[in-house]
Amino acid sequence: MAITPRFALTMRLWERIKAVALTDVGVLVRGLDRDALERVERVLLEADFGSASFELTGDLEAELKRGELKTPEQVRAWLTARLVGYLAGPPNPGALALGDGSGPGVILLLGVNGVGKTTQAAKLAQYLRKQEKSVLLAAADTYRAAASEQLEIWAARLNIPCVTGALGTDPAAVAFDAVESATARKIDAVVVDTAGRLHTQRDLMGEITKIAQVLGRKRPGAPHERLLVLDGTVGQNALQQGKAFTAAIPLTGLIITKLDGTAKGGAVIAIQRELGVPIRFIGVGEGVDDLEVFEPNRFVERLLSE
Ligand SMILES: Nc1nc2c(ncn2[C@@H]2O[C@H](COP(=O)(O)OP(=O)(O)O)[C@@H](O)[C@H]2O)c(=O)[nH]1
Ligand SMILES: [Mg+2]
Image (cartoon, rainbow, N blue to C red):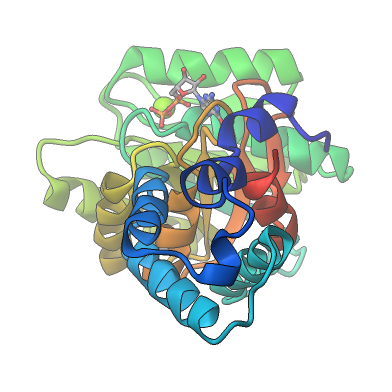
């Protein structure tokens, strides 16, 4: 999928690091002073690198003291390698798991309100269709009429079926119906959109667990993917959400959204480091094609690029 120019333009991490610490060519030979290192640290913190900011700055200082890094290009290469290293594990399994083919593969999307679940459901449907898979969308957010309508609009645009329930229906029942319908129609994949807010976090986690159990009873092995959607622009909040969801349900991956138009791509590093769940996709826009399979090398290159 195409690189979104907006994305590359807004990050410019390397440009910012150079501007705060490497403006003077002689600086690396003399070694960075405390102030310069602190400015680098601040740039990283502002870009949402979280605790990795301190680690990176400390290690950079050590490398400079050892005289290993003599030019800005060497610093850039070192930083690139470090960031790719953070993103190295666990590896992205790549293709979406859809089970053994004896019935539809089931992909469950989770996340709090506003992170982009419904939009990513449509994007994943489009992604699967490009791989010649037939897809059905399931609107298991039955608390707001607008939630089902939003998914139905996407389904109509993509010309794929959508199973919804009346307002207030049990979301697990909608998920169940969706798998039944997909099985009858020999559809390859069901993407289940869920609610992001209930009265309490416990209610929400309880409901998600129930949906997953019901899906598993209907189709052994389902949900084959349990993907948590996180907004890449909210930094520490995304980390907190990640921790709450991983405690409730074993996740198979993350989708980090809204990485277009943000200068805070460091959250991706922080999230990967702290949650240990593979980042599978990134969302880079509001359109149905604005989804990319996550590739660490490419991501870091764009994060740093000028
Ligand atoms: N810029 C940008 N906006 C996105 C992306 N994904 C979703 N959105 C927008 O985020 C808002 C919330 O999305 P929605 O799918 O309704 O979130 P939900 O509440 O989790 O279902 C909408 O305005 C979407 O268009 C993305 O990758 N980039
Ligand atoms: Mg939604």
